Image (tube, rainbow over all chains, first blue to last red; front, side, top):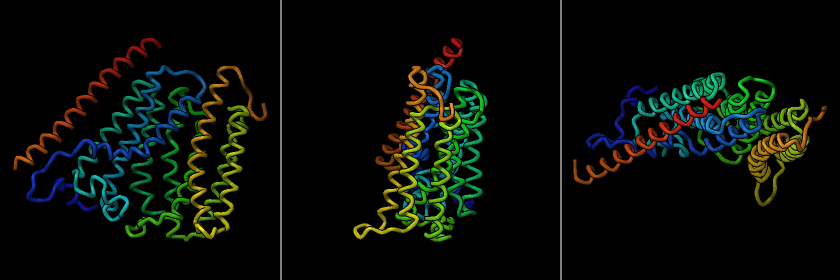
Length: 319
Length: 41
């Protein structure tokens, strides 16, 4: 990394160094990504068997969000030079010089440390350890180590996004069982087809800054095959909570239908079936559907738990 | 520092102070609520 960049003032030489606006600190936390983190975290919390005091439940979600925000700030700090070279990210607080690089690092470390400490003290230390692992996974293993080194970076990055429901579940139960691992696995398997479908129709400039994204390094054909492979792997993982008896037919039927649709939409992407009006329509359709897929699947998980708690349903596939 | 720069400096400082103050207040209330919830457990 460029050592001189670390000491850069937030404004050009000769001008007054204005304090960074709070909005730029907020932008460091990647608020749009955080909405998905909060949603899946809440779903994990609500779908878990058992109860948690509403204040502690709120605190758990707040800590997950703060941990995600802290690791996102560390991501901004580490990738400031790369961000400056890409159109999509060039306007972020660090590449534009609106913020000192050290401030972003300190903010990220502080937010991460507070999130882990509060989670441990207020909710559960196992959840706090999981949150710490998630932060290290995203900020160090993914951002600093593997993202610039392997075209499978999206698969690895998916692991970071898979932590929130896992942590939400543990915050309630205080133990790691098959279900939180399955929730982790669902998002882990879902991320590659979701992101690579997007990568096929939105040309990014990752190649320009030396990040080995799969469509650029291995080509579109391999990317399409990988989308199909991960979609096929996602189906059994998504249905597994029903199969092991952790959910009822309500979640099970939603998982089966959604997974069948996901597979059906991945086939035209694999075959590169083109529509005359829009040559990348299958990819766009798959990408949009993948968003609905995750929201509906996790929503079904919560509905299933609520109905089970009311005594209206019970039993899994083999129960 | 020109008057415009000074005004901008104060505006940003005020915004940051406001956010830090509200955050501290929020966490004070949250920790009180957590304490009550934990005692209840």
